[in-house]
Image: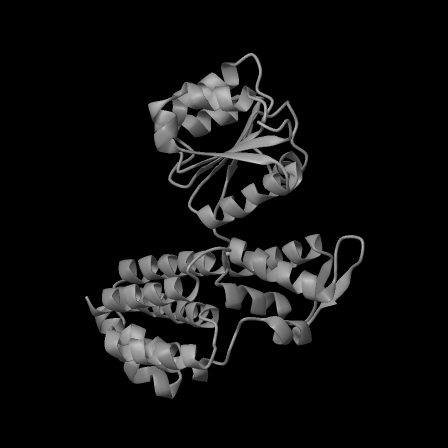
Length: 337
């Protein structure tokens, strides 16, 4: 069945035997993973999670139905997450739907699947499955999304807070959710104890810094100057600055560059585009050079790479700052090419 946002939330928050699997497909993989976390929270902190991927399901189609019908080793709750799923996993999901029993809920993340794919059609046609297409939110939708996520945590956004959250997170649903969770913890809010989320709270624990503190590193990335970037990263690291603001600042700058690149590709001159977009006078020279070397494809790839790096940096048990620095260096080298 095709699910609305509210139907999807209900199925993830209150899993039951009527729905055997939920298919999250479409290009917003970050949003799909964030939605999948709702099922994990609903199952409880002690629940066992079985992780599968498209390659495993292709090699052993019967495994999905077997895992869905199996009891947890310790007798508790159990759920299954399948990532990187494509039409090569069709047999596995057909077997799941046809199995006599399947007590453990399954959420499948399929970022490359389109509405015309066989697996999406299977989910749409079955009353025991839900299909939901995940797309990155537009600017206006992103602000409404920020306010909606905040409301789920008992927070009411006021002023420009929703806009600031979108800018700070690059509109990434998963990163936005993690930031709001931190703010809810800071304000001790919840659905049963509402609080106001204002600029003061955002200023108190937000990860953003002024552009002036990061401008050197950002300019080094745009110029493809790995040596200068290394020196700038060392300065930020020596000052104890988190790499998160740098990653976000780079994404914002690249998003602006993408808009200008689009105008140039339509026939406008670089000088015209820089004036039209009111580029800050100190950034005009660097922006002009970047527009000569950065293609639209490279900009889009770099934005996605940096967003993934931020998510990885914020995750527990990772190399943290090192991962962020490596991502910045990779983007700088790409810009040089």
